[in-house]
Image 1 (cartoon, rainbow, N blue to C red):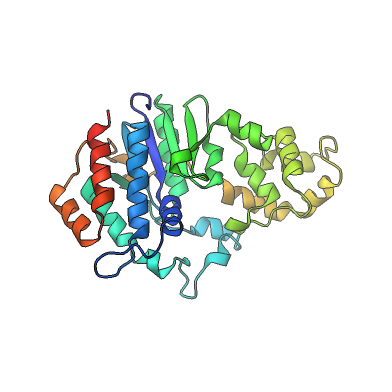
Image 2: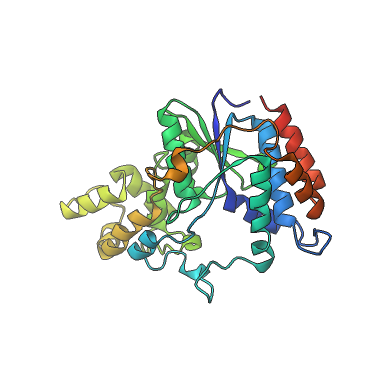
Length: 312
């Protein structure tokens, strides 16, 4: 059971990609359209609501999967995922389901939030910090470790990590992140910048692996702290050979810090008037029923209805 006024933030792209690859494409609507991602996502949300009973819930979206400010800082950012037309390499069978997902979430009355020029991570970061500042607890549901940098015991803000599925969520707070990676709980972004993250096109510092990255972050606190130490001529605290490697990677490190940091202060109307209270019944019962019939979603929609009605 979640604390009173708890906010759940869904990394929706992470969840629907997981659903798409986890549910067979043979699951289709009567007209043959694949609906595996839609069904999987709805069932995930129903399970999360049933198990956690959040007071508030927001489905956070990518309005821009590769923001210009990150590409300007580091051109390799997600460059391996750029399709021939310049867009993201989303499988056609998944792309066809995204409008259905939007329609179902709208009819169900679940809040959605995306801001032009920003990724879902940034929307999550802004909403999480804002809610925690007011004393509310925040659960972030994602399969993306980049969001570990938001964990904060004071809020508290924690990540419900989906690597083992929504039925087997791994609760990652500051203590859990520190225990797993040997770094200060909120320093995951700095750690990722140093050791690299191929999934985001971050090459990392050549020769700096997990242990060295953890030692550097633990000693200097941040990439900025490392660069300041280099500027000051500090020699102590650098693992063997790492100082030379870091000196050679100054340009990358300065850029990577901009790329890996989740934005936590978006000022946009899409986020200021957000109605995020978890509905106890769908916003538009008729529309939701029509969508369920057209797209073969009767089971998942029924489970979502039941979970919303039982939430307290």
